[in-house]
Image 1 (spheres, one colour):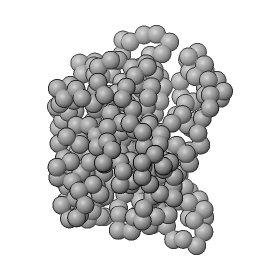
Image 2 (cartoon, rainbow, N blue to C red):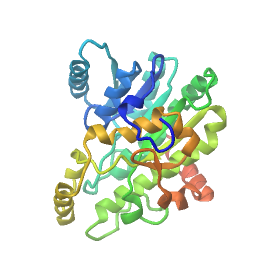
Image 3 (tube, rainbow, N blue to C red):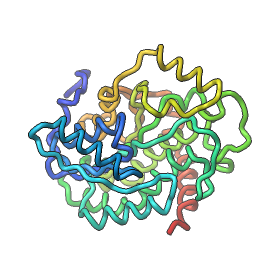
Length: 314
């Protein structure tokens, strides 16, 4: 694919020898992402809480693939428990000697205020802090893989985010108030969601700044307006309005929604066009978040804040 040609699943290159992790890969966008990567011969680990649900998804993917044997595996991980995230990274490193692509796909949206056992608001932890920890724990393996690759853009980290960040979230990171417990209003649940996803965008840029010279590049993206189980979580009047809006707003299928993730993770165009940047479907740079991407001081502060937050995790 070159220039303005539209990226499709057929443009995913042969991935023989690649090892990939996709969190939340048993349904929706993640399911389609895993399926397409596996169809191109990648070994794919599906990160999730439920072995039963992931096993069912693997069976369905294999059925869809027909006679093509897929190399799919379950990786136990609970993003609501930071110790589980660290354990998942340790388990993976014991099973594999390389990691070529990490896609932080799993997320939650618009859930009522609740703290995890780690003391963080659910959306902040699941959407931002747990993926940050996962990347941190797996970075040695990513760097080793990159050092063994003749290509400087084979090893990639992809953070799924949302265009909603610029509409409903804070204009900057609230590092002294990441749980946002006292924020009010009809859109408060989505404000917290947008805050966590702003973190994902900044995280990708900071990762790329720190590690691209060593062969690990990073990207953030919006998958498109995809109606999945994410949108059903907000019980407020605004949540009901959002669900109605989703039903009458043009949406894309999970198959279509996965294309931007596949582009960022595998296309040779992505590193040339926008290392560390934010893509909207499919493979288009979105300038509205450049104020965050180019905020070197703010991104460094977020990194330092996150490092302190994960120091005590056993």
